[in-house]
Image (cartoon, rainbow, N blue to C red; front, top):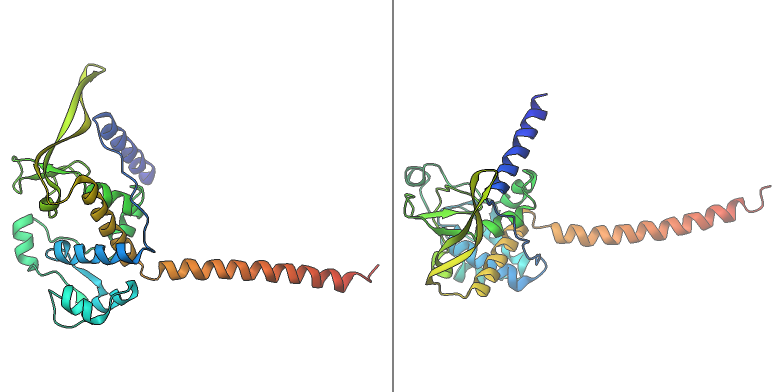
Length: 250
């Protein structure tokens, strides 16, 4: 009974968010087989995310699976440690992070899979939407807020790439209540990337995080296809052998 009540409350909460102009998740590009995109995503992750967030279940040398050499990893991605075999640990001190943000930033090793498990669409879709919906909010301690995660304590780590912007709302009235419906964005200052380039960069980052959550996923899918083909062929030969064995039996 408790589970039913909790589920009902969650549905009502989502309905209330939709009625007050809550945004729908955007579809993240699926490019976990694109090595160039994964390499760019790894570069963005190390430069912008690893300052505060760890990926403690991932080792730097595992990036060789996406086409990087050990020397490339050492020269371009090894900022928080000196050994390629070390785990991806955040540069920030956990105590300082808790004092600044109110909580220690979560580990991102399997964040796309954990978000998927919470019924928020796919984890990649959620993070893709989240990283593209930050906006300036001077009322917040960090100066930033987020449409996908209102009242977030995290600042906009990619703001130099995206620039500063604020949401535009259309005010309507429903059942006697004022409703603010999100209609788009107003760019206050430009970023170093165009909107299209920024979306592509975030897409590469999200795809890398999706790959990082399960580095063997593409291998698993390829093996699964071959296993299914083998079973189909085996089924055919088994069927023909069975027919040949019983053909003289009356």
